[in-house]
Length: 409
Image 1 (spheres, rainbow, N blue to C red):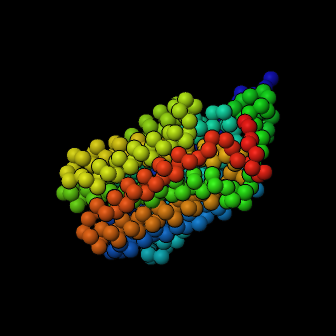
Image 2: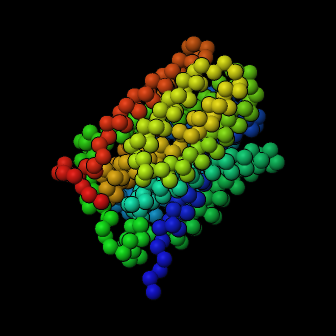
Image 3: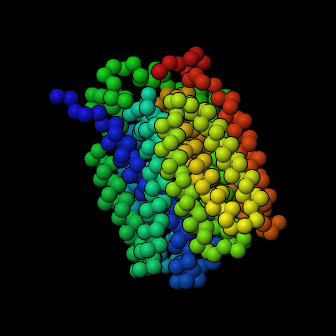
């Protein structure tokens, strides 16, 4: 008797992994105040650890991609999740500033590079072809749910105990829950358990060919999708890192920024589900264009926001167009270039995304310092999103092969 198709369990595990990975990586800001109170470390200096984390994460995306292509996503995701857990537990012992930079800025980022969106997208793409976009969006909802659960949990742990206990609990979530689940449930490929992608009984929907990283880098389609994705990175982290301070500029309390980001995460979770249902009817490219335009409108609204209530509107509209872009871009690249080299190809695309994200964080702060407000930074984000939307319309609807002939699925 043949066992049930393992794909749904794989998607559930990737959902759980992304909950832990994104939840942990985005908690850093909540540790700034207790670290400042305990050691007097300047908040500006502590924020540099976030920049280091982002750059390290970006640099290691191609590295992890190559490891995934060689050893498979299971071992990379499990070991990277373990590294994140260990790094957080080590953070409970910090007494020197360099330790926070090492444990969070470097080790956590390396772990995140191997168990974040790219790695889990590769795994899901190996198990699904026909339903790839839908399953990628379901898996990626873990990014939003992780923020909704683990960010409040971190605040509760810090308030009720101390920051060291919070680091330990978060670290053990990865080591005790995520890592064993990946090791026990996940298989690298359907063929490892004598199954086919999507649970089909024939290889009809198997990827016919896969391009290499070199072939992808020579492809116009890769650069169109990646440069559009880069505008997502710039604007995503511009909002994530600077919206709380912008809310304070408008007269809001220090907790308002976290509330707004929570609203955005909730809206993103709903949008992630809806886009997964609409992908086959509308198409990945068309949905991407729509989401870029929605985010563009949100940024125009933000640049013109003179009052607090308008920030709540922004949070909802922006949230709709935030995280769902990630699985759609992943699906487009998977459709174009196949699954065998997706680790390397997606890793390079994520590297460009993170370089752009770091630039967005830097320019947001720089323009705020130079002009006294964020208006010019938000208009810059809007201009980039318009560019990303136009670029995305140029994506062709057929896959790209090594010999430039059309592939079929």
